[in-house]
Length: 346
Image 1 (tube, rainbow, N blue to C red):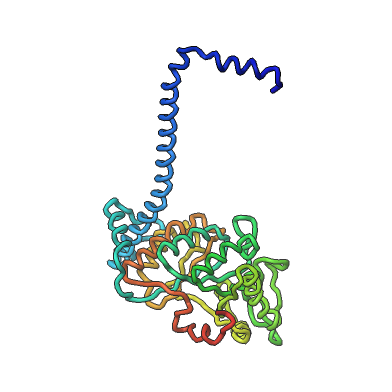
Image 2: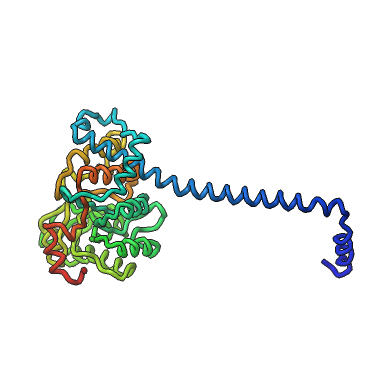
């Protein structure tokens, strides 16, 4: 604006008619009303955002309770994969689930050990949120796998995520750096495995004992760089495939192998057409027993209908309804000694 135009605008401002001045209070009142309406709409939107996740969690909890009851009566055994339908959460069931969440928990009738292997990481945040909501500590097995974000699960971009899980008190083991699926023991102490990632992905690679031990320890080194904490003294062979020599080598460099119970296989790697989530949920609730180690992944590329969004909350709620509690492998009777004798990992 130039200096010559300023007086003209000032004169116009001072020449407002009495009628216009009289209308100002009405305009001001309308403006105040609009601001109040905008504030009310914003508050309602915020309330909906808060209620949405809470309601979904309650619905999932109610579904888990219903599925647990069905599994207890043997109803799940009559459901075929093709005809499976998820349990419905009615309003009364949702209310019951909210009440059950607030009530003090009775003594545990048994313990289930939840474990999660890295994968596409599409379910990473959901898993963390669900465990936190139930105040559950779990065990994670890490490999440097490609994620849905286009990076890798042990890249610096995942540092904040893993630091948060460390702060929450979870347990962490190696899944080999490149997700090396064991093939067989070779001659002269060699170990043959097929990396899923890295420069030799998809090719059978021959490891010396020292090289295979290093492949397990690479996860520990990267995890310490990302979080300031070392892994715990446990590992899990990708795909659960082990060889006698690989187990010996891993043990010699300080890592005890962890598999899972037959009933603890979530089935999240199977086809969702042949094995719908409802069938997998009911099977887990029916078959899991005290002391079982449960396995799921933090996202599977191949499964069309992802397991965790539909099943994790109902599974936990259903097991809690049946009187089960949860713990990490640090508390597992088969692994306590390993944790005590490997002070580096504490």
